[in-house]
Image (cartoon, rainbow, N blue to C red; front, side):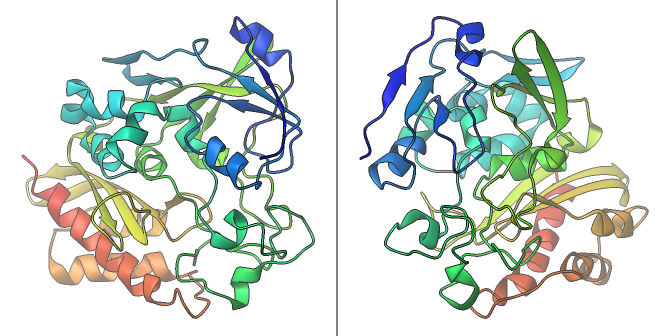
Amino acid sequence: MHPFILERPHDLAAALAFNAVAGHDDAPVEYIAGGTDMVQLLQENVRRPERLVSLAGILDSRIDVGEHGLRIGAAATMAMVAAHPAVQQQFPVIAESLLQSASPQVRNQATMGGNLLQRTRCPYFRDVGYESCNRRLLGSGCAALHGQNRWHAVLGTSEHCIAAHPSDVAVALVALDAVVEISRTNTQRSVPLNDFYRLPGSTPHIQTVLEPGEVISAITVAPNPAALRSHYVKVRDRASFEFALVSAAVGLEMDGGTIRGARVALGGVGTKPWRVGAVETALTGAAIDTATLQQAAALAAQDAVGYGGNDFKIELMQRAIIRAIEIAGGRP
């Protein structure tokens, strides 16, 4: 592990003054919260910061559900949110996505803000024995393009990076139009989560819109009828502690047997959580029947590009969408 200095500021203002960075893979000064992902990256020499600034004990961890919708403090743990009765009842897709993430031990420690900022599980990024990884060293190439890419993205890719985004709950939150509150010295801004993540383009080492000296302080979800009839489907290689090959988060507004409105997002297939508006449009006003669902789900694959080992994801993600809609539509 590369040696670093650990700073323990006494409040958020002091932490922000360090001008550290989150969501960049080449930052010399970074923030750390629960540390479940960061510690692994440090141990594997993937991250080599000169200084870490701890956010432990200085970020909000409250979970508030009311007429305003849902507000989750960035320091709330995954376990806290998943176990919250009002989240389970009013936002089931969020609770389900969390319970299908990681392990109980990790969920007890990992923060919601940190989960949104976790790094890809691309083995070429995680193993410094591979030199070609533009996320670790911009300009070195992308070994996954012509290597082992079964786990990689088919949407939002570029010639510089095809790594899939790893978060489960981010997919559910994008489907529900969640917004992240971002704190910086003396001010705050809000960004829709769907716009928070950047496509890799030619700068895959920069994954979010966070600027130096900014941290996620909270996540909000406005009241949404589709959240009540929502579901998360996750397809993975084993039943627990595994990242998604493909996942689908769906929320439906129903009028009898007719879909009045739909929210659909995909995980495991995009370089960021992937909202599929074309599928949502096709579902609006439709009934939940096999032919309609197949036609709508096929629209998710319009811009998909496989790289050999991950070609199967293009068909699988359509099936995941259909399954999630069927389950969500059957909720009372």
